[in-house]
Length: 335
Length: 151
Image (cartoon, rainbow over all chains, first blue to last red; front, side, top):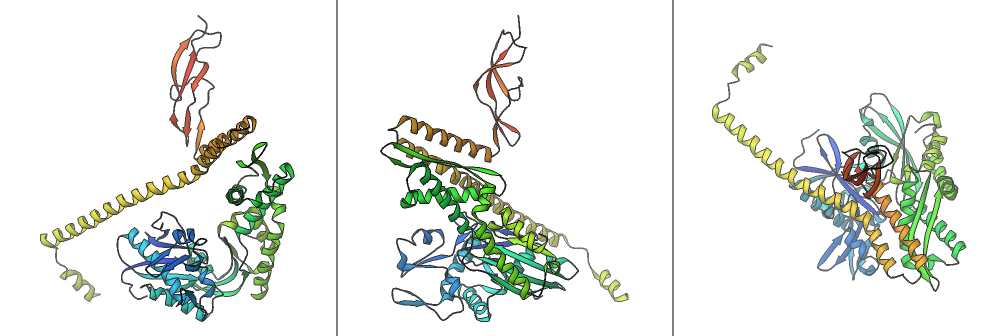
């Protein structure tokens, strides 16, 4: 391997969120951004004299949609342009703005200039999508050492490249808004993507939505009030739903407690409901079904059955849901 | 083999000047490392504070909502109970729990009074203020009244 000059960071350039890491003592460490968070929203606000990226841009997305670009990753590799106040930007240019913020924040953390980057892309990205990602890095002033497939990066993080024997790995990546399944074959320390499948519009957010609707339904039955009509209540329901989902990964029952959610002439009302894991699992049965199909498809496309998969890697917060892991175990026979 | 030996033979003992330079370099590296560590510690403190405050702010929001909804005392109290439960959950999630009161233990309880009582000596008769544990260590000892046993 040729010698690399200057600091190098690894970047997960995501559709909704991005993250970046540096190697410290042989271990990858996620770097917190300038705001102190581990992930940075992949949202850009473009004004003539100022470009804002991340949480601040996300905060303005609703009041200033004309200057806001989100999910630009979905446009990478296309000739589609983003038009802001009559000025055209390529998806590469917009992605570069995200990468510039990441570069800046990483430099502040490291106390030195970041010259190089390794950027991950979905395994299903074609050549032009990969080239576009590389271009974005260059526009941001980064020397892009490698473009790595997201499932491969996951396998590397688990140190799977260090084993001697050949093996077949299924990477199950169920994040906030997207779901990807990949089958990788490892031989001589090199990964080959055998197949990919997934659902671009299925994620943990859908699970939150289901819990939210369940709370609202239950509340309506008890009080006759529809919380979904009240934007403030909806925001609080959303937060409570996400919290309940996370807790249900380790607890068999959670208490959903939202005091003073609304008020009518009889006084204030509160949400105070127990949600058991069993009820939760019956609520998300449809989501689990939708996760099954791509797993079967990926195995079929790789011409493998369960016995052909040596290892499963789970990526993304939503894979902590026990029902999700159970489903994969049932299909693949291992986790 | 002979060649390797020759190379080894030609390696000279480093001069005082060279060693001084190396030492200066190592010292400079260490100074940089120390500064970076200081900065990281600051960042880390901020992150810890941030994480905890982000969990506490919804509780503050709820208090502020409660204070705007005092018309129906019964429902107000119900709401207050729920907020109190949220606070307790927040403490539990942070590894905070109430100390046990099985018997007087000086590491867990600060005795403010000792009184004659029918009960066995060192029974805790009253808790003036709860004591708390943090991750198995004492966060704050309880303030208690202890029995001195029968006179």
